[in-house]
Image (cartoon, rainbow, N blue to C red; front, side, top):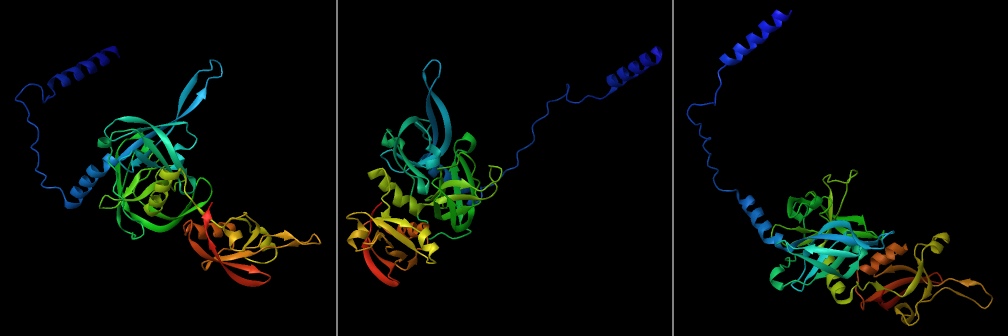
Length: 359
């Protein structure tokens, strides 16, 4: 048996010695010739140029939470999360999602050129998932993003998303508008309506980044994805730029968005119990919009019986069967605007002119 093994090993050795080996010695082997590519396609050129122009406006945001060590009592900065944003103007205002900075004590903004700045909070609008930060940077470093419109978008239109998914800075994804007029829920549980749906890949870290049209204009702020797994599944959502462009100037000026209100304490449960669709006026704010318009609140009569106040059933013809519907109807107007409020009073409909106040 030992002799057989030795003979087998000898045969393998002789076979290896006699096997032709290429690439060892002989003339050098040149690399393959490169096949000329030709010019890039027109749509490729346009996408490349769009990214070159828009990417300097996109920023990377990291947030930290400040915590005190239980034993040493030293204050530590703990990473909270990351997201994207964009330069809104040359004064250093940065727009992102509210949920990107929610719960954070500090935020740092990194520009496209790699420079980083501590950011201060200017204002938030959780109902639209928007926040405005500000950095102290030279105007030469700031590249405000061009602003477009969202009221004239069409399904099938090309869109481009730039952001930092999973911390991968300056990533471009492309797609189309898959749907318009969608509704998603904000962090305050209030619905955001008129949302843009896109199939451009949006992943964690893209939040707060811009959604652009083919002209490189901002048409939305990427805010959410629909995915059971938490990763991209072909459905992304963006807050329309028309809402952004209304809210951001108010956040910069006042730190909050002035939302229109009637100046009432609403209740939609009691009307449902008595078989009426509308919002009961439980009370009115003294000297508020509703009080000045003569709206009646719920009260007690001389015998101690409850006398129901006006029941708001419509605002400028838009039905208000619930408190949520009432708030939606008000959000389509501006503070200081005069609207027609239709109420039920003693089983009769009345139209009252109300000049909306700030909420």
